[in-house]
Amino acid sequence: MKLTKHIIIALILGLITGLGFNIFAPEAFKFADNYILVPVGSVFLNSITMLVVPLVFFSIILGTAGLSDPKKLGRIGGKTVGYFLITTTLALAIGLSVAYIIQPGAGGSFETEAANIEVGDPPPVMETLLNIIPKNPIDSMANGDMLPIITFAVLIGFAMARLGDKTKGVLKLVEQGNEIMMYLVGLVMRIAPYGAFALIASAIGKLGFSALQAMFLYMISIFVALFLHTVLVYGSTVAILGKRNPIEFFKQFSPAMFVAFSTSSSNATLPVAMQTAQENLKISKSVSSFVQPLGATINMDGTAIMQAVATIFIAQVYMIDLTFTDLLIVILTATLASIGTAGVPGVGIIMLTMVLTSVGLPVEGIALVLAVDRILDMTRTAVNITGDAACAVMVQKSEDKHYENQETNKM
Ligand code: ASP
Image 1 (cartoon, rainbow, N blue to C red):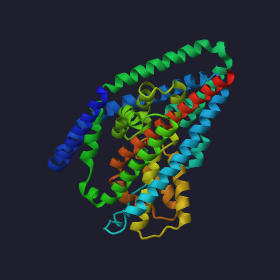
Image 2: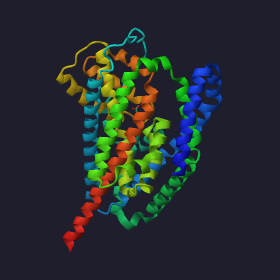
Image 3: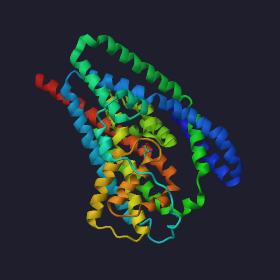
Image 4: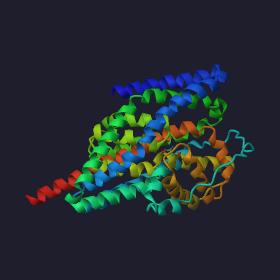
């Protein structure tokens, strides 16, 4: 909790510093950004990202190897993926509704001519899904491709569970490897306040405030939808399905949310998110190490909300009417797009091209929303990882219940 306080103070100071530079000393900002803010931010970001691949690898092996009953993996997997799909659809419905109520792109003037921006092609979602099975696991690890790493680790864990005593030595090694990674997460988190300060000051200092003004309604729509989704969907998941106090949940998980906010990366936040879930929320290792890495990779409700609002916004600016069927297509493609979005900064906006093309909207529309995307990326990433934690709470509760029922049946 002391650490959370320090991170919050750092975020506020970073915000003030970034604003100060932006308004009073834009020239000095460039120097400060290049020589202080970016280096300090990168030291934190690199140190935490360094732990992602080994931590995910060890903890998934450990989690799967600990499943005495192989059916449990299928059960947890089914509930997790089901929850991810349902909440992403709800996120899109909330995003679309809020955008239709607030009408961010109607009225106001937006510079559609300034739209000669290069947007890279989104990676094909089918390819991402097929790559779940790695041809070369070492290559996947070197590239930090999460899905194939998850598959490989689950298979190793599964084999270890089946082989039992024969792999005792490897189990010990993996357990100790996991301990080492968790210890390092704690160590790296000590510099989190400095990192958060530098990352926020750098992001805010770069913001163009005139762009913010023009995009006010667009940003408000996204903030409102993110807020509603977090409170309604995650709040009720935790309260109804997890049988826990949602306020306590948000409070206890907040350190990870602040790290997500400052890094704009679900992947980089993963080590902290897992540690926070296991230590503060008391989620078991087997649930946390399966649900959270998978969620950080494929479950992006915050990103889906941005894509929904951005699609409506762009349609309104270009005065293109979307039919009901178009909206269903948006829900389908945005679900796929958010699955295909990697948990690193700014990818959600690239995946937006896929959604726009699916309903015939001009891809250049992205140029309109790009200028303010960083601040939205920070916010939606915090929501993205909270969804994974809410899912972990739900899965944990239903697993506990499953075993309680089995016990009572035995009696
Ligand atoms: N930055 C987001 C994340 O890591 C992805 C995105 O929407 O760009 O979760």
